[in-house]
Every structure is written in structure tokens, then in C-alpha cells.
Amino acid sequence: MVRPGLREWFAVGRVFANGNLLRNDDGLKLCQRFEAELADFTRSKHALALSSGTAGLICALQACGIGPGDEVLVPAYTWMATAGAVLLVGAVPVLVEINETLTIDVDDLSSKITARSRAVIPVHMINRACDMDRILEIARKNGLQVIEDASQAVGVLYKGRMCGTIGDIGVFSFNQHKNMTSGEGGAILTNDPHLFTRAMNAHDMGISYRTQSTGGNAPVFVGNNYRISEIQGAILRVQLSKLPGRLKKMRGRVRTLDRAFGDRGYLVAPQNDPDAAMGIAVTFDTEEEAIDFAKKRGVRRLFDNSKHVYTEWHAVLERRMAHSGLDPWGWAEISNGREINACPRTLDLLRRSCAVNLMAVAPFPFARILAKRLAA
Ligand SMILES: Cc1ncc(COP(=O)(O)O)c(C=O)c1O
Image 1 (cartoon, protein in one colour):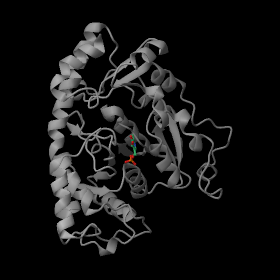
Image 2: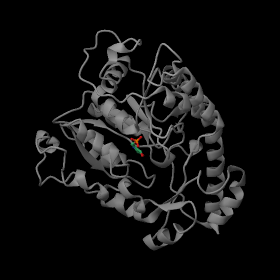
Image 3: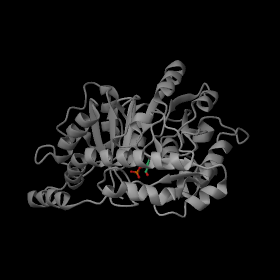
């Protein structure tokens, strides 16, 4: 868990002294300045800060024009919000297996595309980049939009580009468990001005009060309020300045652990871009070995991680929305007989795999001690 420090405390104090806590693009402009800094850091043309990763996914889907009657391909291993956001805009998540990289399996992705498929959401889980080259190739061939869920991979690279900036539009989460945090928070990244305008519209019902351009002649539609406050803007600016140092330390830890686990003969889960590896996981031959390994401090078996496992998404699986008239499955004409959720290979991998929480297990300077303890 990332803990805020003294610098965040002072930054928030400055907002209190100013007295205007609401997003304010004329005063301290902290949200606006954070967005500019985030766009610069990610080398993305546009960045939009909003209240959570979930809000980011909803706005990204709305920006892409996804809605009733559409299918969206979602990996079976992700936080439930990825699938939930799809349903909240009226579309249906069709689950796709993961492979040994613990990210979306591109072969299974290809096999699940139908005439109704409109988008794919590759999720860069536990700081591990998806196979973006092949995903983009498949998406372009089949007319799918690519919405990257990089909630768990803020700052992680894939072949020199940052996760979240490779597809059409990408999403970060800044909740307390992520690489940087403001308690709750999120962001959208895109190079497409049209998608940016629509995302901005989706996240702010009263967009017209903002001084930023609404991006030309895109029609304004009914939005929501997913804005962040200047308090979050202040914290996020400090957190972003700390992120490169944090990522460097994480990368160092991954290398140390990778060597230690390799020496021990553990099967370290392969990465789609090994040079940029920022998260480490081990896959065992049997479930029992994984359960045993997970007893070590800072280690978690992926199957035991609650709503990251699709079989725990009860409301999704049982087709329960807030109102019975909201029926994404009916709108997409998905009969009860059509199986859109079964992903047995994903369950098998999650049962046998464990991830190491690089930030939780020991102070950063002691990576070698940590490695020894885990590999013992
Ligand atoms: C992969 C993934 N997607 C989306 C989200 C949703 O982010 P938030 O909690 O900021 O709404 C999370 C949060 O844990 C996540 O891990």
C-alpha cells in the first residue's frame, strides 16, 4: 500500500489555505496541472483526472460509443469493475481466458469475437503488460476499439510505451492499492481529441462551467459527476513526482526476485515484455504448492483474491442489475443458453499461481533479504 507523506500533507494544506476545494481551473489549477503533468509523463496527448478507475472505464466506454446491443471482450482475471463498467453502459462483457502470462489470451480473444463485438479491454494485471502488439492486430482486423485497463499498471512500460497509452483509450486507478494514490481516483489517457472530448463530457454533467475547451463541435450528451477535487489534484501531483523513483525500486526488486526464484527452480510466470517487467508471479504445478507458498509474508495466491476471480462476480454471472428493466443481455440477444462466462483455464492458472506484493513485504533497500526469505 502506498502511504502519503509530508509533501502531500503540505500540498493539501495549501488547498485549505486557498479555501477553494472544488476543481478550479482558474485558481490553483491543481487538477489541471496534474493532468498536464500526467500527459507529459505518459507521453499521451490528453489526460483526464476523475474520481476512480471504475468511473474511468465507464467514461472510456461512453467515449467510444459502446452501449446496448454491444459485446465487449474482457479477461476473466481482473477486478470486477472491468466487467461491471461494461454492464453499466448497457453492453455485455464476454469473458476471455488468460494464458500463462496471467493476462488476456489472444487466441481465445480471437475465438470469441462475434458480429456484436465492439471493443476489447486488455487488463494489465498486477503490473504485467498484456500482449499489446497482437491485441492491436486482432482489434484492427476485426474493427474493435481497444480500451486498456491499466488500473494496476500505472507507469508500467510495454516495448517502450506506457500501458494505458497504446490502445485507443486507457484508464488508470489511483486507489490506495495502486502504484500512486489519492485514496480514491483515476485517469483517462488518449491521443484522440474526439475520444477525449467525449470522455470529458461523460465525467462532468456541467462541463460548460469549465474553462477548458469542450473540443469543437462534438455534441454534448448527458454526463455524470466523476470530477476530482483540488485536494486530490494536490496529492496526485506529489505522488506523480514520486512515481519514477518507486518504479525504479520495484523493477530492481523484480530482477532480484526473478533471479532468486529461477535459482530455486520456480516457474516464474512469463512476461509479454520481459525487459520492462514490473510485477512478479510464480506458477506451480499443483494447487497445494501454491497454497503453501502463499503462507509466506507478502505473497498472495491469485485464486484467493476475492472479486478478481470471475466466479466471485455473482451479480454479473446471475445477471442482476439495479432495475429489472436494465437488461444488457436481452439487448444484445444473448440467450441463457449461450455460454459467455466459462473460463476453466483461467481458474486453473489462478489456483496454481501466486503474486508477490513488491511494496508490502520489506523496506525497499532490503530486496536481497526479501528474495532469500521468499525463495527459502
Ligand atoms: C484491474 C482494475 N480495473 C479497475 C479497477 C477499478 O478502480 P477503482 O477502484 O479506482 O474504481 C481496479 C481497482 O482495483 C482494478 O484493479
